[in-house]
Amino acid sequence: MASDSFLDRSRTIAPPGYNRWLVPPAALAIHLAIGQAYAFSVFNKPLGALISGNVDKPAADDWTPGQIGWTFSIAIVLLGLSAAIFGKWLERVGPRKAMLAASLCFGGGFLIGSLGVHMHNLWLLYFGYGFVGGIGLGIGYISPVSTLIKWFPDRKGVATGMAIMGFGGGAMIGSPLANNLMSHFKDSAPMGVAPTFIVMGIVYLLFMQFGVWTIRVPADDWKPAGYVPSTEHNALITTRNVSADNAIKTPQFWLLWVVLLTNVTAGIGVLETASPLIQETFSESALGAGRGVTAAAAAGFVGLLSLFNLLGRFFWSSASDKLGRKITYAIYFGLGIALYALIPTLGHNLQLTLFVVVACVIISMYGGGFATIPAYLSDLFGKYQVGAIHGRLLTAWSTAGVLGPLIVHSLHESAKAKGLTGAAAYQNVFYTMAGVLVLGLLANLAVTAVKEQYYEKGDVTPEAGGH
Amino acid sequence: MDPKSTSAAPAAAPEKAALGGSVVLAWLYVGLPLAWGVSQTFIKALALFK
Image (cartoon, rainbow over all chains, first blue to last red; front, top):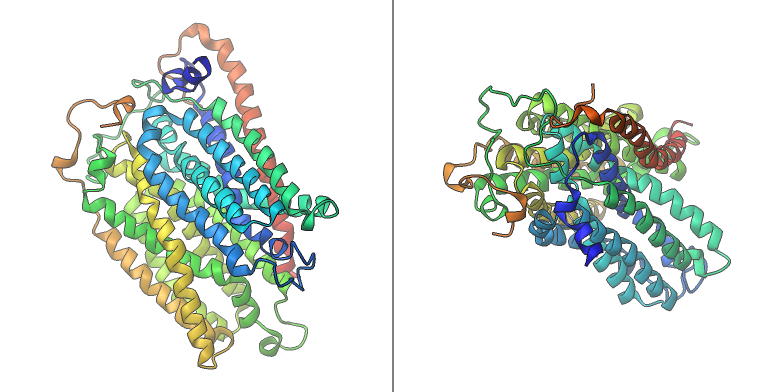
């Protein structure tokens, strides 16, 4: 079929003179769209009031926050699973077909979800946004990674940082967009949610097509003009290749799995608690009448964290090109341990400004951890199937998505049961997360070069990715 | 300087100029929505400093 062949990897090989700076916008078109998932919470209250029509007084048959929360959880679990399952397929068929599949799943997930909202059928919402949309998230997340690494062998961190920065930025677009649409449609459907899902599904589907039709892979013998691979010996940067199947047999893969797991688990600790944490720690009873942090100011704090999450993805990942991946992660963990341990003290001493600054630095390193990992994988395993290896590593993210909130909620509930309030109710959360980062630091320190037996023999091509 | 393909033919120079324009348009396509989202977030974040 003509349209089918147009999607094939062979049809996406860039012609001579192709400007590689067209590739990051193609990647961003995908990540800015799927990053909307981080803003799903904007639908929580409206989805919980579809019958009553009043977010403050849900009806008996309205969905509970717990039921609605599963939608996002399913999507994140499916992100990790589909990235792991479809990674090798992606390497074989190329980024264009994968991006098209991602756009259809992500946009289609919204459309199926809108039907679930319209019919007030929770399972259809789970299936649409959670399951189908989650598959779109996973395929979309990894689809540009190996292509970017091949286009930017001299700046791998910059390239992947730009794309993965888009995932952080996606929430910043998705949240106000959803709010504006729900406000526009509020008179035509319950809370305006179903038509908002339809519009967002179509808009994202179309927006992502830019990436689908712009993406190009470099020719096998292509390299940037003037680029000479460093001749300095660095055992942690290979010029050879390890397949995805072999990569998961290496201790290095599982050490990086722990690195990602711990960094994300700890970061979620801050993100999950950001709004109540700052309001309870810097309350009126602590600071004096009229001086406490209000709900609006807490929302501003959450917004500020989102900005630093985005900036950290680009800044830290780019810095890793100069510093090296292992040193960059050592900074995430070493500095992270100190800052996580410092947060309760700043809360006790009511140092609001420093508290905000420290939280922003922590979240910048959380984002940086996501953005630096593809380059770390490429350094260790080569670029041959780095997208598939990255996909498998993202199961650590799914695990952290369950583990992080579990740790936070159980420790916080336990502290409140003991009668602790304010900063004291959160201190064990932060000390525990500092301990989690110690594990990550040790795992990172243990990373060494991959052993000879795991490397591919001879030349490898992406099309041979199915072995 | 923007590194290009090492196999670019000299005759491809006009194509490169056109691609330069394409690069600007491509970055605007993704940059404008991102800038809008960042500005919205920044406005929300200002409430923290009031």
